[in-house]
Amino acid sequence: MTNRGFDREVEARLSETAVRYTSGRRRVVGALAAADGPRSADELHRELGSTVPLSSIYRTLAVLQTANVVVPHFSAKGVTRYELAEWLMGHHHHLICIDCGVVEDIPIPQPLERQVRELVEVIGSRVAFKPVNHALEIEGTCGRCA
Amino acid sequence: MTNRGFDREVEARLSETAVRYTSGRRRVVGALAAADGPRSADELHRELGSTVPLSSIYRTLAVLQTANVVVPHFSAKGVTRYELAEWLMGHHHHLICIDCGVVEDIPIPQPLERQVRELVEVIGSRVAFKPVNHALEIEGTCGRCA
DNA sequence: ACCTATAATGAGAATGATTTTCATTATGGA
DNA sequence: TCCATAATGAAAATCATTCTCATTATAGGT
Image 1 (cartoon, rainbow over the protein chains, first blue to last red):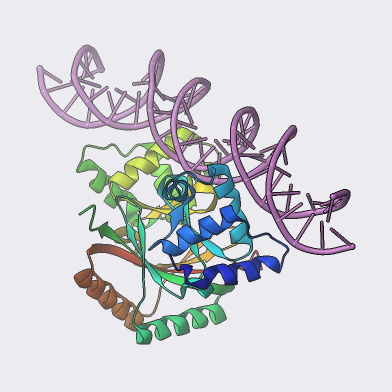
Image 2: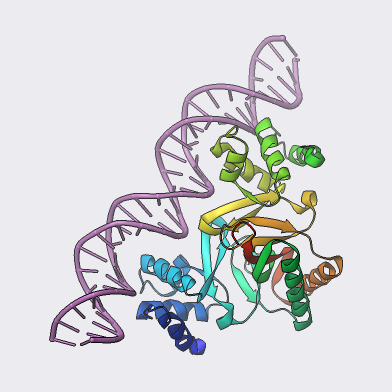
C-alpha cells in the first residue's frame, strides 16, 4: 500500500514532458508497484477490479513506457506484461514459467552481477551493438505449475 | 547451404512421434539453420519467397516446437520468433535491438557461462521453481538502427 | 505397384490482444 | 472563471496467430 514513494518520482518524471499523472494512471502504477513481477493490461484490469477501463490501461501503459516509467516484457500468446523500470525497482532478473507464462523478479549475487555487467560492456565494445540494458532470464516451471 | 546435417537429426527426432519431415518443413528448418537469430513466421515466409504458405509455416513451427526442435522467442507487437533448439544450435545468448526487434545470437566466455549455470542451479534449489533453461538477454541498439 | 488409414496442406474464416478513433470530460494555467 | 489542451471511455479497426475443412500426399501392409 505504501507505494514506496513511487508516485512522487513518477509524477516528477511525467511532468518533464507535460504528461498528467491522473488517478487512473496512479492506480496502474500502484498495481505495478504492488506486483512481484510484470503484469499485462488484462491482469491489471482485473487486479484493479475494473475501476480503470481496459483501453485506458493500454494507453496508460504506452504513455508510461514512453516516459521510461515502465518497461515491457513480451510473453506467449502475444501478451505484453509491464513492470516499473529499474530506476524505480532496482536491477533484477527473471524467473519465467514455461507453462503459465508468469514472471517473477529475482536479484542475483553482487559478484556475479558485476561480472555480467563487465561482460556486457566488453560485448558492446566488440560488436556493432550498443547495450543499454540486460537481464538473465531463467525459464522453467513455477511452483503453481509443478 | 550445408544445413549442418540438421535434417538428419530433425528427421530422427520427428520420427520418434510419427511426425513426417516433409519438404515444406525441411525448407523451414533450412531457413532457420541459415539465420543468425530467431525468425518470425512472416520473416520465414518472405525469406522462403512464399514457397511455403504462411498458415503452413505457423503450423510447422508449432509442430517443431512440440518436438523440441525449435524454441520460441517473444518480441514486440505480439510477434513470436523461433530458432533451432540448443541441442542443435549450441548454447548461446541474445542481443536484442530495442528499435527493430531483431535478435542476434552470441556466445559468452566459458568461465562466466559456468558461473551462470551454477547460479541457475542454486536458484533452483532455493525457490519453488525448477529451471530448465536460461539466457542472458542484452537489449540495446543494433548497427542498422544506430 | 495398389489400397487405405492417417498425416499434411492451403485458403480463408475466426480469434484475441492491442491500437485507433472520436465524441466527451477533466485539468492546469492565464 | 475560461480556454486550450490532455485524458477518458466505448466501440470499431488492426494484425499476428490459430482454427476449420475440404483436398492432397504419404507410409505401410498386401
